[in-house]
Length: 618
Ligand code: FUB
Image 1: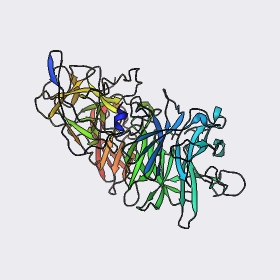
Image 2: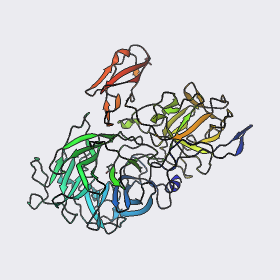
Image 3: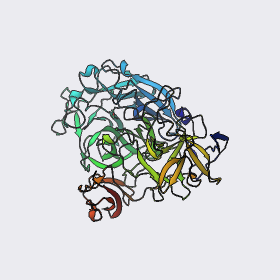
């Protein structure tokens, strides 16, 4: 299993590396070819997704506790074999460097909670307080009698076992259902995050924030297992009229653009100086809109202030409908920990955890992050054809529409003008047989979980390895996503030829920008150069069309055009084409005539183009 190896692998050098290491001779049919073993990427994302034996174990909704020299990662175990959550327990991993992870086992089973059902170990967070560890979690009340509730369990150790309080800390009935049409009645009270801090006057504050479709905040008592009766009326009440009275308040986030909304997955965070003291504003990280994007808001007080929208951090994941983050400072750096469905047969119901560094600008705003397959330890490679054009997938933003997933046939070709990130690949052990050193599977750098694959018609596309593995452990995509690497057929020492494992005797070939596998290819066209390098910076603005194509006579629409613009402070904004401030010059597009047009888009003083295809009427 790949995970077994990943857990122990250290970061590889991020400078240019050679590709060939050793070679052996073997033959297919009449042809004699020489294998050439490529350097595979060490580790990268996801960092978790394994059990005590190193076997695949999915887990989502990461939470992280930094305790001394160690960071403890917690996940809800995803045991689903379909398209719904089946989550029987919470598990823990530990790390002292954010690169190597130790499996610590089950910390609590849903079935051990007297009031909960057995399979709803949804999002959680562990906090340490006065030497004890408190696990805040959400689970469904048995028989759904009271919807989803928030519970709390206690342990003397960060790795458990945790013992539940015996009744919910927050019942679903304690907050109103305010947003029909989004989320669901009965599960507004999920996704707890807790925060404890002593202020400058020495007063201690303990907060619990949670919620789906609405975010709520309440104070915790010093026992950490009950909510504070702030207004002293002997019951825990919701502040219906937002008068500041009551014990549970609804959080309002001002300034969210594009009709986006708070969805779920809150995480409270504050920056720390080199002595570990908190400073600056509070950050509320959260999942926004559907499919879920990662965003943040800031405030001066978790209880008394309005929260101001800060920006988008990550677009919807390439392989998971939800995302859920933890943000922690650890040994002088800030880390953004999130989940994807990037492992084989992965999805929003079979997730695994990823780590990237989070960067702040001088004013405290947060830089946009792109999910990637290399994380802190992996390496990305460029694969260029004999003309110097890199293999790249088509440029696109992950759709917010469920119907687009899983991505199974993304267009791939060679393109000298391809954007850097779309032309980076992560060389993995061959899915068809990880013991074969000359086998390689080629994962997209910026669409983690999507791999180059050979189609039946011998064209090459990119898709997710999303189908269930058979009893031998391989998915139906394993072979078509694996290539045997050979010395380049053009005889150049530096080149490599990729033979399809699904179709032995067919070799990856670049012809006028098209990628196919061919039986008798031109020797230059099937010889590629592989170089491994660090990812370059994003350009200042990219404009991307999403899923729409037009037929002659259709009206041009701009709402699906998505623009990623980096402003002068390095802050990345992602906006739709119909957003205020976006100027679209449609004069170059003639939807009465079939053809391919370049549409000019201007935003924030930058101009870019997006390709519009108008097809003949069927
Ligand atoms: O894992 C179940 C739910 O999915 C979580 O509670 C949400 O945050 C979403 O990730």
